Image (cartoon, rainbow, N blue to C red; front, top):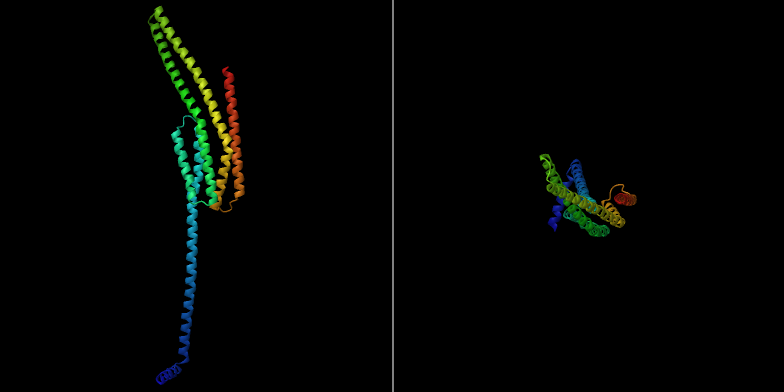
Length: 292
């Protein structure tokens, strides 16, 4: 213990011999080192905070990109689905093509459920249910259209064959007349064939006209069914689109105004369809009156 006291005393005596200038340099260096240390600690903290903030921003951006990549095609698919459904009024459109477009559209719409909120999932579910119901009801309504179109095509084929036969008999008659006077029996036979084929043309042309009229009436019924179901489906489209736009969080987006525009557009589309049906029915009535 005595030896330790001697050592401490010797060290203190030595420190007293160090000039004040040297002490000033040492203290200044220590202050600088301490300042740099605390500065680095502060910078490290801010750097960590910036990294965390950047990571959060990147996560938000990735989420929004994912939403856009799924939601925008889902909205486009809704338009494709309605286009496919509307095309069923045309009997020349293959049902297999319609089914393929419709299935692809529903698959894209369904993908939105993977990232959507509960509210949007509910809205998308209502929308897909409404579209499926519309599709199913119109498939049933389409069957008379396909049947009548097939019947009209068959009758048109009979008319075409009768026209061809009639033309050939007339050609034979003309060629024989150029060769000289016809044998009465042969002339009667040719005249009979020409009259028969002409009768076939007239008969099957009348049947084809009736089938065409019935086909048009069936198409009107198709449009009436579409008009009946359109308001309910349009409301579901409106709700789903507004819910999706809410999740996209578009800058300056006014969801209430957007919803009102969607509603107005749906009403205008319904009114256009109603006028088109009325015009179509008026044309059909005029055709009926002219045929009497």
